[in-house]
Image (cartoon, rainbow, N blue to C red; front, side, top):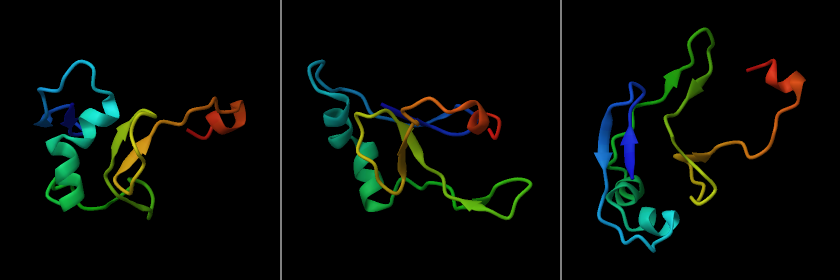
Length: 88
Protein backbone atom coordinates (compact mmCIF):
# COMPACT_ATOMS: atom_id res chain seq x y z
CA UNK A 1 0.00 0.00 0.00
CA UNK A 2 1.17 3.51 -0.63
CA UNK A 3 0.32 7.14 -0.01
CA UNK A 4 0.93 9.56 -2.89
CA UNK A 5 0.63 13.32 -2.95
CA UNK A 6 -1.31 15.45 -5.44
CA UNK A 7 1.63 15.24 -7.85
CA UNK A 8 1.60 11.41 -7.75
CA UNK A 9 4.84 11.27 -5.73
CA UNK A 10 5.09 8.42 -3.23
CA UNK A 11 5.37 9.76 0.32
CA UNK A 12 4.90 6.47 2.24
CA UNK A 13 5.00 2.83 1.15
CA UNK A 14 4.06 -0.21 3.24
CA UNK A 15 5.05 -3.65 1.86
CA UNK A 16 5.46 -7.20 3.11
CA UNK A 17 1.95 -8.55 3.74
CA UNK A 18 0.94 -12.13 3.04
CA UNK A 19 -0.95 -12.73 -0.20
CA UNK A 20 -3.92 -14.18 1.70
CA UNK A 21 -4.49 -11.09 3.80
CA UNK A 22 -7.43 -8.84 2.83
CA UNK A 23 -6.83 -5.21 1.86
CA UNK A 24 -8.46 -4.09 5.11
CA UNK A 25 -6.26 -6.48 7.11
CA UNK A 26 -3.10 -5.31 5.37
CA UNK A 27 -4.08 -1.69 6.02
CA UNK A 28 -4.91 -2.32 9.69
CA UNK A 29 -1.40 -3.72 10.24
CA UNK A 30 0.41 -1.09 8.17
CA UNK A 31 2.56 1.87 9.09
CA UNK A 32 0.07 4.03 7.19
CA UNK A 33 -2.76 3.08 9.58
CA UNK A 34 -0.57 3.57 12.64
CA UNK A 35 0.49 7.02 11.46
CA UNK A 36 -3.12 7.99 10.71
CA UNK A 37 -4.16 6.86 14.20
CA UNK A 38 -1.41 8.70 16.06
CA UNK A 39 -1.50 11.82 13.86
CA UNK A 40 2.06 11.46 12.59
CA UNK A 41 1.24 10.95 8.89
CA UNK A 42 1.67 14.72 8.46
CA UNK A 43 -1.22 15.33 6.11
CA UNK A 44 -1.15 18.92 4.78
CA UNK A 45 -3.20 21.54 6.60
CA UNK A 46 -6.75 22.31 5.45
CA UNK A 47 -6.80 24.44 2.31
CA UNK A 48 -9.30 26.72 0.60
CA UNK A 49 -10.73 25.21 -2.59
CA UNK A 50 -9.63 27.51 -5.45
CA UNK A 51 -12.34 29.93 -6.56
CA UNK A 52 -14.36 29.45 -3.34
CA UNK A 53 -14.25 30.28 0.35
CA UNK A 54 -14.76 26.61 1.24
CA UNK A 55 -12.05 24.96 3.33
CA UNK A 56 -11.33 21.27 2.82
CA UNK A 57 -9.08 18.80 4.58
CA UNK A 58 -6.73 16.39 2.83
CA UNK A 59 -7.84 12.76 2.92
CA UNK A 60 -6.86 9.31 1.72
CA UNK A 61 -9.19 7.60 -0.77
CA UNK A 62 -9.76 3.85 -0.98
CA UNK A 63 -12.37 1.30 -1.97
CA UNK A 64 -15.10 -0.36 0.13
CA UNK A 65 -12.59 -2.69 1.80
CA UNK A 66 -11.43 0.20 3.98
CA UNK A 67 -13.16 1.60 7.06
CA UNK A 68 -14.34 5.19 6.82
CA UNK A 69 -12.80 7.75 9.16
CA UNK A 70 -12.27 11.51 9.21
CA UNK A 71 -9.15 11.22 7.07
CA UNK A 72 -10.25 8.32 4.84
CA UNK A 73 -12.97 8.42 2.17
CA UNK A 74 -14.40 5.91 -0.27
CA UNK A 75 -15.33 6.53 -3.87
CA UNK A 76 -19.04 7.09 -4.53
CA UNK A 77 -20.43 3.58 -5.11
CA UNK A 78 -23.32 4.49 -7.37
CA UNK A 79 -23.96 6.21 -10.66
CA UNK A 80 -24.72 9.93 -10.65
CA UNK A 81 -27.74 11.21 -12.53
CA UNK A 82 -27.02 13.38 -15.58
CA UNK A 83 -28.11 16.44 -13.59
CA UNK A 84 -25.68 15.72 -10.74
CA UNK A 85 -22.94 14.75 -13.20
CA UNK A 86 -23.21 18.21 -14.80
CA UNK A 87 -22.21 19.80 -11.47
CA UNK A 88 -18.82 18.08 -11.39
